[in-house]
Length: 164
Ligand code: SF4
Image (cartoon, rainbow, N blue to C red; front, top):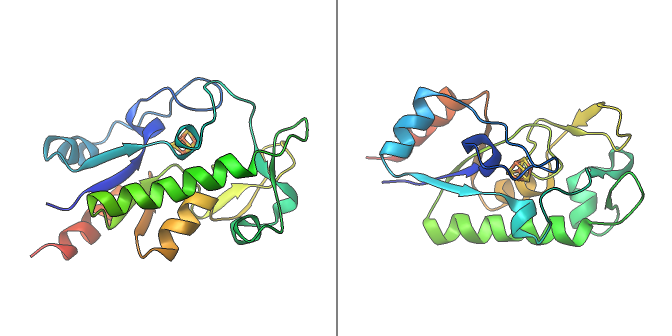
């Protein structure tokens, strides 16, 4: 049975920068859990960042590709460069998806790691720009179908389409 990589904060794990979660209570997630499909993963924790931690955003709306190519950084409001941890976490997400044979991921929208369609713009004022974040970018590059927490029905339909 195909596995699904899912952002840990969506499953109630208190791994966000502020020490909280973004729990999604949804029948599809509950069914996937019962089917033992879920691979619960937080890229930022896997990359070595603590909980809690300062927020961080991709600088100057540069985009995940620029970060992964070394042309832009992910920084905290104080200007600290946390790029290496974010990239390490993204690579760990790809390795984990491969290890479990996961071809589908459901990730938390807007995060500089997990965001898909939107990410915060680097201004720490709540503004966003088109995504993805660095983990979503590397998973897409690896051929994983990525969905947000608002797209669970589409993710489920895609998953069914993969299975005989
Ligand atoms: Fe959630 Fe992803 Fe941020 Fe971890 S890196 S707290 S899984 S959005």
